[in-house]
Length: 269
Ligand code: HEC
Ligand code: HEC
Image 1 (spheres, helix red, strand yellow):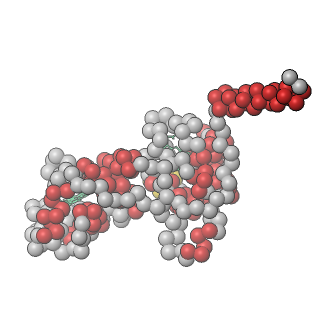
Image 2 (cartoon, helix red, strand yellow):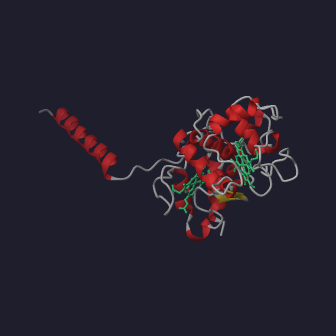
Image 3 (cartoon, rainbow, N blue to C red):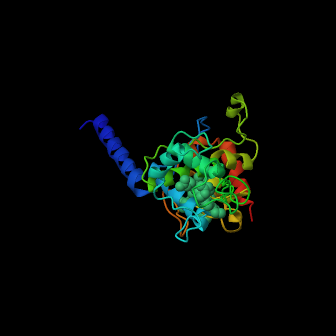
């Protein structure tokens, strides 16, 4: 072998060795996120996970099962796929829904548009529903949560799931498009834009799917928090499901936004 071939062969062995080492020897660490400007959505979530999220909200934060249970305080929703079309044809129907999805949405936000016979507020002859608007006051489901619950009810109620996994709510929903690309200014805006509050108790929001983050800074440092956001499966918080938290924040957040968020969470004690 001449010297050139020897060097080439040696390099190949080295490269192969490093490749093997990098792939198998040490855990892959994702580099810090590049400041990509991308549309935000719940990208990493599958429909099954979205439906499961809806089920959790239905049985938890939504307080739906306080009334929708076997005690008969409210109708069971396991046949909603069959019942909704009948409601829409009923002469007593006052709403504007055309589809099962729209009917469920309307039931959750304007329950009195149709009151299931026998379930009205007493004395109103089934013209007023005792059910609250679940997006308001005490329950306060956000738009993502409402969609998830609809997906869950369609799935559990024998209807086709027509809900689409929504794009995450923007910090200021009515902010003009041109401003979207500018980096957000506060951690609260980042949390709102990326919908952390749908799953976490954080910054005044009350999600329950993931751990409470209002005191995370008391036990976790910045590195841990940063890693939890960039690579959620690296460490799974005890008692919580893996694979639920979206893995796309690292690509979607600008570096500055990420650091603001990490600082804020680390300072929440
Ligand atoms: C305080 C009790 C109460 C709570 C809490 C409640 N509901 Fe209801 N809901 C009712 C009652 C009573 C009815 C029947 C009267 C009516 O049609 O509005 C009803 C009706 C409905 C209907 C229409 C059912 C049909 O057969 O047409 C849907 C859908 C529904 N609720 C979904 C929900 C969801 C989802 C939640 C939780 C996010 C929820 N409800 C929370 C009491 C409640
Ligand atoms: C769809 C639900 C969901 C969303 C949205 C979500 N998370 Fe999570 N998150 C979880 C779940 C579930 C866990 C626990 C399992 C795990 O560790 O991956 C978690 C874990 C975490 C942890 C680690 C907590 C601990 O005690 O170890 C942090 C920090 C965190 N999330 C921050 C965020 C931030 C910041 C956002 C928004 C940018 C966010 N999450 C959005 C579901 C979510």
